[in-house]
Length: 201
Image (cartoon, rainbow, N blue to C red; front, side):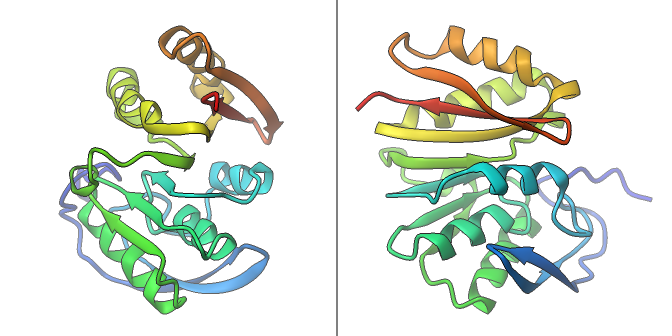
């Protein structure tokens, strides 16, 4: 056994790839996963809920915590004219998302660490199943790194499990973000909340 977490930068577990079948954007896809990343066995429930309720992305798109890529890949396919940025601290996740995008012939995907993204870029759409288990303080830092980079008129969609603090997170976001922004609960399904953060145009 190793002490790997999906937020470990360099997983110690063996990088043994396996191909799985998952449904993304209404189609069954073959993708590669491996140990040492988030949800290597398939599409996790939270991400499935998020993808069920979000509208098609627009403009420049960001996926915070891309894992093996389900959100990044879906956004890239739904919005082929957009550039979709998938970011993760886990090197194996970055490599797998890049590989899966190539296998699905998605040329509009850019994957890397948070530090690799041009700090001046703003995003019209953010989709994320944020890494709650990194701890509240680290999660708050992560969200305050990216949410202020919403472009005017942009929207962020976050899925958070109810028993992992979705309601308290919503209240915290309302307190932290400018008063002109809105933070709303858009859906509840399978013990998950879908939150929408909107920056005024």
